[in-house]
Length: 206
Length: 150
Ligand code: SF4
Ligand code: FES
Ligand code: FES
Image (cartoon, rainbow over all chains, first blue to last red; front, side, top):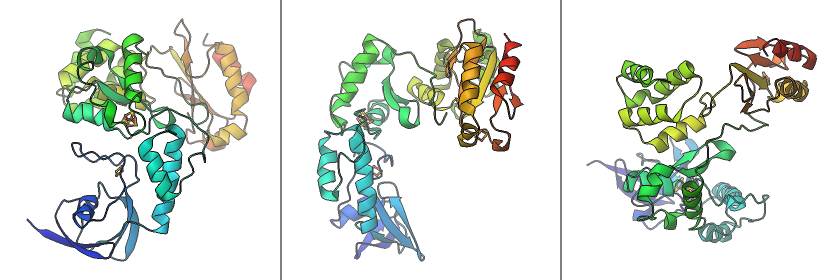
């Protein structure tokens, strides 16, 4: 296996090809915040709090550490003013949806995010996809998925599958970073009153 | 929609999961909307989970999971059309069809949708009726166009 040498926060790191920046960083004790990452699931790149700055051949950019594979001579910085600003804004937006989420509040403290910056729109979901991906990738039950898009995107159970699979599983509940009860709520909704898929559209942007 | 036709479309694409969107589009074009039975059939033969199909069919606006009207009216409410009075045009459309944006009337005559910029801002406000573009349209004019389709 070819080893790749790179630099993370000033430390020289050797990592195997295909390793992500996040894993390489962990190997030398540099921790990067994450919200949508789970050891049993494929990286997803949904939350972006793991954003880091990378510099390669004189060009620098911001990438998601949980997805970005290590490259030869890459110079990675995991904590800069710019990254703090990005993480802070992301957290503030997510907190508008899930104001009481513990992991969010903890990170908010660290990055000085103001949980009341944006008007509350408590949907209790930050679209991290943990529940959806767990159901698909680990349980292979496919009872749960996202529907709609943009501001209207939400999780939704397939009632026919959920009524068979979910009562004995419910393993997705505790993965949720916002409140363990969001998936429970949507599940009950799906089983008691199967929502009709709507075709309503957003008035302002179509 | 009869299942033979659905199977025919699926087979044309060798029941390949990679052609999922193409297959859904063809069913949508053929039938004007995507009935649940059709989606179940696609899910089973392509071995694609229903959760994925629902994600896709609710993501793209081309797909409809409820019956659509014979006449499709798209009112552009993009920025350019908005400042040129799209709101009033939309009101006129809703008035004459009796259908609110995003809805279809019970007789399945009209479906009204708002869209965000269809790329001909210079013609704004624009309304597309059954694929035909009406540019610089006044509320009274669109009322007349739609009256004729009632
Ligand atoms: S319900 Fe929770 S776990 Fe599921 S996508 Fe939303 S935030 Fe993530
Ligand atoms: S942990 Fe990398 S995007 Fe969420
Ligand atoms: S805004 Fe209506 S066509 Fe561009």
